[in-house]
Amino acid sequence: MVLNYIWVAFFLIAFVVALVKLVLMGDVEVFPAMMNATFDTSKTAFEISLGLTGVLALWLGVMKIGEKGGVVNMLARLLGPVFCRLFPDIPKGHPVTGSIFMNIAANMLGLDNAATPLGLKAMEQLQELNKRKDTATNPMIMFLVLNTSGLTLIPVSIMVYRAQMGAAQPTDVFVPILLATFFSTLAGIIVTSIYQRINLINRTMLLTLGGACLLVSAIIWSFGNMDKEQVGIVSTTVANILLMTIMTGFIVAGVRKKVNVYDAFVEGAKEGFTTAVRIIPYLVAILVAIGVFRASGAMDMLIGGVKWGVEALGCNTDFVEALPTALMKPLSGSGARGLMVDAMTTYGADSFVGRLTCIFQGSTDTTFYILAVYFGSVGIRYTRHAVACGLLADLAGVIAAIAICYMFF
Image (cartoon, rainbow, N blue to C red; front, side):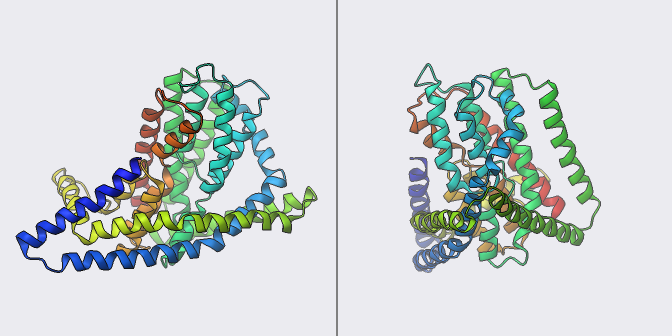
């Protein structure tokens, strides 16, 4: 429903702005420009979706090998002590724990479409434990905040989009996204724990969160002592090594479990093809709306107003052009994706704005969409503190993304 209002608003505002420009300024080119934008962006959306097919098939195939090879179960064992403290109301050994682990594992790998079915299954199992069927429980809210904070280890789709848009090094945003999403997730965990009165001051959580903070601090310190060229080389090299290591590790795990890795890969790859085809209409819809909005001059007016405000405060304004992606992300993943692509098309994939929009896209997730889909699937009407916690995590991710992008690029 939210996306419906946003989509309609884009067209109506664009039409009004274009009409004003025509009547008051005599701009006879504005309406032809808007119509040209509809055709151009429709073509761009299809080409992007077509280009995604191969890579989605690849990673969903690899993910299926990892699932059958026991990688997900291994991750569950590693995270078990931590999750028992984040979800104290879930009985030990309950099946929902496995679904939550698999969902978060898929999110960590940047496979949003693969994560959604697992997340819906987890919500159904959490609802079985819910005594008040119309009200969100603490475990439900913590689970959703972990989703909305967008914890991502491998932002596959973003790197694919960068490759599609001609980035010289599509993986150069890997480390910045990892850092930004860490701060978003950390903020989400802390805020939700405060609301739910979960004690994070215990040996397991202090070791986990403290260790993670030290690691991230070391990464930031290390990159802070490098020049821009070194940062780009090291970040890209580390990203490629990690991606190749994970891919090879999944295959080795499948072989050790005597899984037919080829058949498992094909099974997962089929899902990748289906997913790529399924997103075409959504991508066309949002890119056309954004294209019309931009061609009318409404986007320039919006950005100009924000830039004026930032300049009045005496701050650097390089990040302003990327803000539409950050503002859209809590409302719609496809909308934010469209704005990210639009920014890379307009400013260049390797520009500061192009890279920052990618970091915005990877640092958080679609808060309102996730709440609507996950809660709606089990009939939850009263969401309690879920929205507040999710949006605070989003804000932390946006602030971190801006700071980290200035540091790296």
